[in-house]
Length: 296
Image (cartoon, rainbow, N blue to C red; front, side):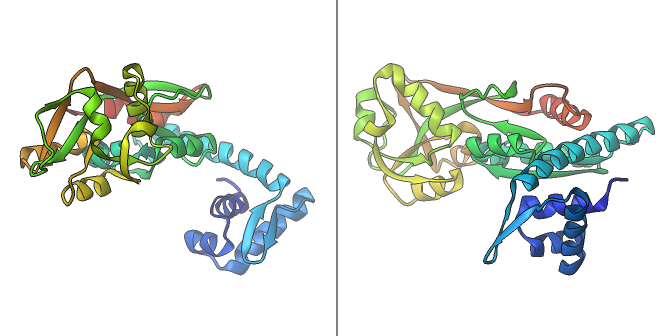
């Protein structure tokens, strides 16, 4: 029901590639160029600039992208609500989740949601907390689910699930102890998440009252996802702070052990984040579904 040319523009603008847009929309690249040219003629502005093989938006293109993002968000809500009138829930929902949530919490929720609402096309984007916030601001996702403490005033935060970060080591690690003092933490080789990670931010906040900075820790390496850290731990004498949700299987199989750090408890909330204002019906539906799902 919307102007297909705007869909073409929006796809090129978000992918910054005429070729990828053509592939995604199942049309030819000359057809993509034709649609863009027609929009430029209509508004009498240039939307893209080419720098060799690279494509970037002009100021006019950035303005149009902002409006098409809002238009398609409205259209998705319209589509869902009109289908709801016919007692059929359908539409498209784009969820962006930080790594731990996406890998260890959401899969069973997504499977159950799809089973109950098979006509809702749901996509999941995974990145760190900082990048998910940026994606929401840029209208690349409709709903964010993040870890971490930083509060961006542009978002509304709704608690989703409690989590705890614990110090973990390979069960065969010769440095393994049942309990350590906080000062001993400074001597242990540690694996940490990358800058921008919500997990790293939560750890830094928890260590601050103990007078410990992240920079003081004996960092062996920084890795960008939990699975890489878990794999590294299995082949080293390192330790790492990981979510209990992420190590449930390893604890049951007794391949990992938890080390108690006296005086240190690291708890956090996983939060839904949405822009201020009225939340779309599809977003509300998914949030309500996830909150009532049987999560431990």
